[in-house]
Image (cartoon, rainbow, N blue to C red; front, side):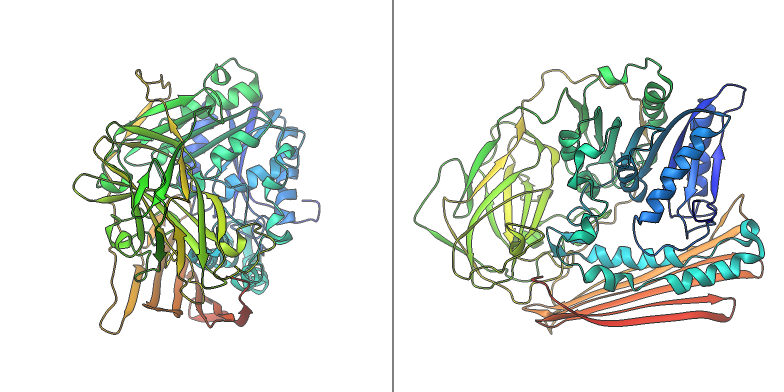
Length: 633
């Protein structure tokens, strides 16, 4: 690189004398061992079809030199720009480069594209986001997310993992020491930015959508929290843009179980169109394809979700939304005035939806019983939702700091309630995520925000339910005090973007795949014990496995505990320990990262640590304790 740092890359190059385009994927997740099997599979898939694949370790991770100290740093993005130019200049390359990736790799793909490297001709970001503050793992609608800490502990292990001496030689120990000493107290850093300031704006392409001028294919799954920005990006980007959203979670389409896609077919059509100039027909097809599920994924027990693929020729869609009015206990077509609705959470709401990412929610009756619910009449005919429900809630609060949590469910004729989509807003961010203001207590505030976009088929005979609560623990940290809301019946509204029911299914050219039904581990909502304490625990036992081709045994384990006393939001505690190890013969490196978060009314108390061992030797032990003022959170 420009500063002399050497980056480590794996290349899959098509055989033969002709030149080919190249596709780059850049993530910090250890191409040597952690991602090796996936990289081997996808590299061979692309290269055997005439597209070279380049898999780069972010500087300071895997076998690349340097240190990594945060997400999507300036050094990382500039490295990608240089690597794209390097790929384009190789004798086997035709000068055209694409970039793709999932999660981190999708997010940095957008950010690199915004820098407009000359050789970058098209991108395919998957499971990504355009706003690092509201749509990444850190703050949900301005509320502090547990995912911020779950990810932060894992990220510490990413930053502190050792390079492989089989690749870097005897310098591995010095490189590892440099990484360990450079690893920051990252959770403390993130918590010092509780509002959407310049720290989060850096790298958020929502600041300037027009900066991306290359063709973009957005891909995600409805069960992936990162699907939320897809429709917004599809609308805002000005370059040729397509999107596809399937019935899966935070994964690649071809790895999705039990139903996925033959993604090589579609991805190769994309790259050959834009990087080779081949007429594949992909740009003459609808801009948006997505799966319309007939039930939620939580209901299927791990079997394929019934439904069908639908298509929209353009986006945003031009269908009129249907407005519902929040009357006392009902979602109605017409307002019913004269009744005041008083809401206070009847307990700790959220145990049926504890996770921000990956884990599916449970049946929602537990949380519904602790919330204020508004039910429609049984539907006379099926309705199909596509897009982001929009809520306009007029309420007053007796506390200056509060959150508003809305859950949209389908209530089956048997009374079971299944989560369709949801939204969270820290009400101090009602007007601005960057300049929060405390609520004027006991004054009516008209609050507007979107729930997460979704596709869902409501069946005839079901009811549509909107559940309102102030908390959603442990997904978000509770407000300092539990407020009471007051709403006037017949004033607040919910707009649902229904689409016209199709008489004929839309053609879908991508081959679908079916696998073994997966085992769904739905959360079990827990009530308070005799002392009013609620305790949720997750653990991952050590599962060593050998990485063929690298001759390394890799293992990881973790324990996580969330505790709170009902009626006492200041009693909330989150803590987690996560470990990883790498071993080849006598070479054995171990990393352990921990955090613990507690609070009082004015501040957070955060403890975080990092420990590394080589064999029986403790290489480093870092710890940090911080008291961080609450910024209207």
